[in-house]
Structure formats: structure tokens, C-alpha cells
Image (cartoon, rainbow, N blue to C red; front, side):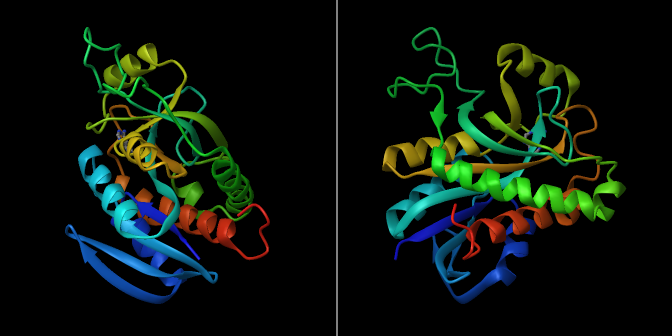
Length: 252
Ligand code: ADE
């Protein structure tokens, strides 16, 4: 049986997923540790992407070239851009775009040269399955919301749409306003998703991206970032991944 790859952007998230694994073997390649294992009886490979587009692209290329992977899911946190996308919400991407790709005037702004495209679509069935699991977990998290209350999170919501990626941690109101103006349908910003999307496209492999919103990509974006990942995002990702791959889940 081929494996599902789960790529985490942050150490804390990978650490939170490791206790779910059985029969773990670690293989090291290109300085990355690939955890080949079973999760709910399903073959999986877990790995840290590294931060930024190049690190994530290397991880995805080594993973897809060296392991028998049927689909890849990237998890992590993101900054909320769109008005309704608040801290604690979850975004399941429909499309990914590199907001810092600009080879104009030779190619249209955002277009990845020689691919003819700026936006890379996720696999719809995979994203639907993750969104179903995420909606269930958000409802449960709301019911038992201690960590959520600490961060002033009310009712976390699920969003689906465009996620943009670039090699910048967006941490000023001016920069997030500029991104909103240039890409009005962008829901969230992070640093790896569109790179992984491009690599999966090159390999012809289905992928999806799941992000918990950790900040509003504004002047206070860095506040409590580490604690949020540890206390909220990692817990949220673990619950969603476990629900998604649970044997009783027909959507997985
Ligand atoms: N990941 C989480 N928050 C982010 C932000 N504000 N900018 C880029 N990547 C992020």
C-alpha cells in the first residue's frame, strides 16, 4: 500500500503527531528525518518541511522521489489576511500562489515562469476529506475551549480558498494591507504551501494544505507565536489528522 505523506512546517506540530504513529522507522536524506510508520494502520511518512519555499520544495522533492507516496498533506500555521479569517480559524486551501513571484514584464506577475500558471489547485477530494475532519474537530474544540479562551478565540471557523506563500513572515499592517489589495481573494499567508504545490504538480501527485491561523499578519503577528503553536495549532492539527485517517472515516 502506498503512503500518505504528512509534512509539518513546525517542529511542535511534527512532535505532536509522533505519538499517533506505530512501527516507526526513521530514514535520513538531505538532512531531513523521514518517519516511515503506520497511523491508524495506514502507511504514512512524516517529515518536517523546513521553513520557507526552498526548504519546503527540497523536502517535497526528496519525499516524492524517494518514497512511495500516493498523496501529500502540508500542515502548519498561517497569518489571516481576509477580513473574516481570525486567529484560531482553520483554512483548507483550494489554490496556492507565490505572492513574491514576480518575473514581470517577461511573465505576468505571480506566474511561475515556463509553467503558464500562477495558481496551483489542490486535489479536491483530499481537501474535502480534510475539511470534513477539520469541521468536526473545530466543533469539538469549541465545546471544550480552555486553550482557545486563553487566546481570546471565540468560535473557530473553517475557510476554504486561496492561500499565498512567500519568503517573508508578514508582520506589519502595511504589508498585509498591500497583499489584501493585490490579491483580494487571498485568505491566508504562509511560507511553504505554494512551493510544495509546484513540486507536487511537477511530480503529478495529489496534495492538500491545512493551516491554523496563528496571527493576523499585522504588527502583533509575532506575539505568543510559539505558545500558540504548542497549545492550539499542534493540538488542532493532531485532532484533524487523526480524524481524517480514522478507520471509520469513509472520506479518508
Ligand atoms: N505563518 C504564520 N503566520 C505567518 C505570517 N504572518 N506570515 C508568514 N507566514 C506565517
